Amino acid sequence: MVVSVRFHGVQRRVVRKDQIHVPIFRNARVTDVIEYLGERYPELQLNRSGVLVSVNDRISPLDHVLESDDRISLIPPIGGG
Image (cartoon, rainbow, N blue to C red; front, side, top):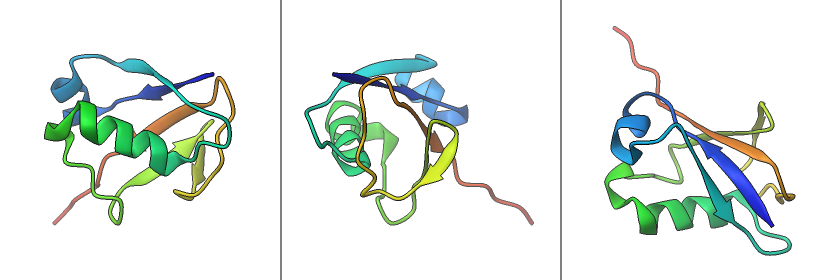
């Protein structure tokens, strides 16, 4: 089973790809994918308390159970002034 993870903005520059495929196991959760990404791309500096995630274009909690072929996006922080 695999899910795709799409990257945006600075994330895309760090990973050097628009999207990657991540292998998952049965009953894997979003947090498992974030952990995988943190190990593979430590320069992403993913903070579980500050990351906003969408699964299949819907904002999802970190404990969301994933299914094969789900599309995950890590939504970059938005700042303003």
